[in-house]
Amino acid sequence: MRTLTLVRHAKSSWNHPGLADFQRPLNKRGERDAPRMGSRLATRNIKPQMILSSPAVRALTTAKVIASAVGYEATGIITDERIFHAYSDQLLEVIRGFDASLHHLMLVGHNPGLTNLVEQLAHAGISNIPTCGIVMLGFSVDHWRDVSDCAGEMLLFDYPKNITPV
Image 1 (cartoon, rainbow, N blue to C red):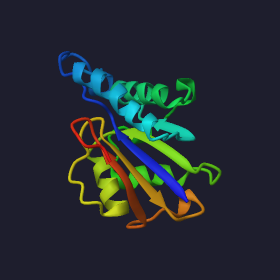
Image 2: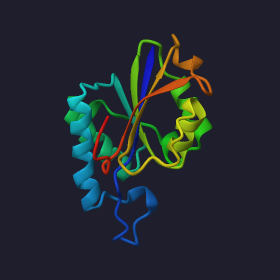
Image 3: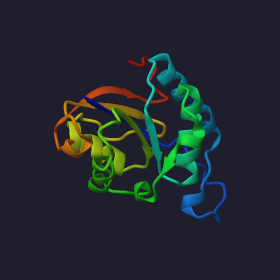
Image 4: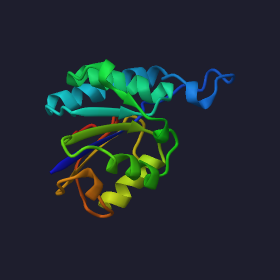
């Protein structure tokens, strides 16, 4: 069994028009939501073996906040430029490259790639993962390379405005 937890970065700021998209920080809502969602994961005792993040400021900041909440050392977060604005097929290629010794992987990235990936892998009926939204998928495979279209089962879908987290 493999578990993939997908996290869309928290809400980012557009207050600095001179900043490149890659450099945009979290806004106040993002700074509030990331620890809240990290706490929800910690309450469920969700502890990934590896956290992989887009290196964009908003994604990496979200990854660090969530890592802290679930007891994952922030220095262990791996960044991968392929995640920044990646399409679902590109994200799947990254995921398929992981070693079989990893059973639970968390990937922090961007839309529309993350939402499209969820639909590609699990047909979960999610039209949009909101900012700081989390989707957890389970796969009955022995190796990440065997993760394929429609093979995933949605285990969790949570987001900051969800008043009844499951």
